[in-house]
Amino acid sequence: MIHKKHNVQIEIYPEFHDCLTGLEQFNKIIVLWWFSKNDTPTLRAIRQVHPQGNVYNPVRGIFATRSPFRPNPIAFSVVTMQRLDIHNNIIYIDDIEAYDKTPVIDIKPYIRSIDCPN
Image 1 (spheres, one colour):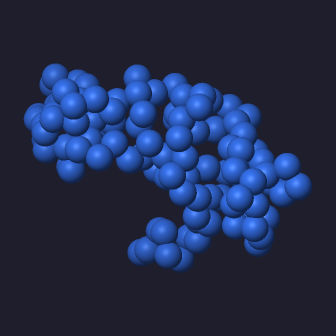
Image 2: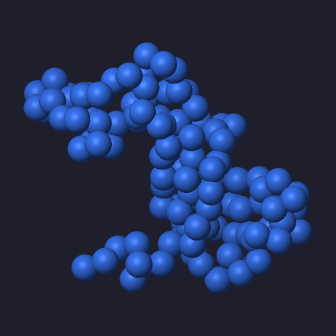
């Protein structure tokens, strides 16, 4: 089970400080992160699940679900950026469905016209 956290901060390594330039123009960002708590050979081998863990839901292949059990346990969240402390390399967000110390793979601006096509 992944816990939703509130008032979260993402700390960026100093060598990526210049990657934050311009991010303040966006209020939503996409955070790609690693399901590190679900990264075992056994969990990576799961190929089908009952969606949302509900046995009354018909079994589906992993790629047809949002299950955290993945061959490559990569997750993404669209989150609201509360503020950007560019001097200290910290992005403050409202919430994310991840544990503390979860590895962040990448951050991208959320652009509705691209990320939510009609």
